[in-house]
Length: 93
Image 1 (tube, rainbow, N blue to C red):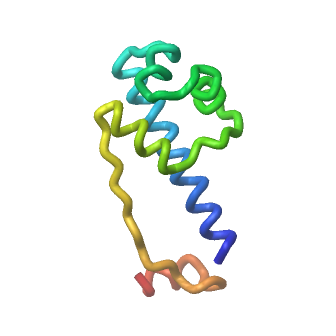
Image 2: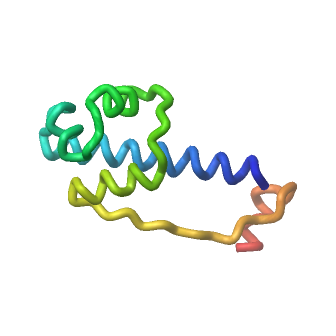
Image 3: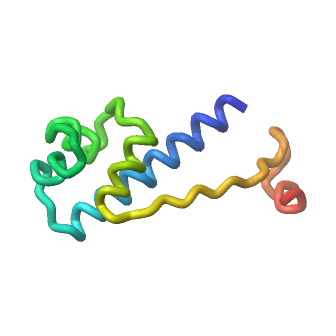
């Protein structure tokens, strides 16, 4: 269960970072201007956007996207029991 949770968090994080990249590109903001708007520093933003590990939380990414005029929707689904083959999972949900 813990492994699935970490996987889901990593997927959510990557989706939020990609949305952040897209928003910054659409708004044509430099990293310096974006960092000011997001109330962070440019090196942190640069590390995040280049794929380096940072301590930026999911909550912070969501707040940043809000400052860029984006909303984030969360979808919760019932997970199939561990060990159930993918075909059988469709029958569960």
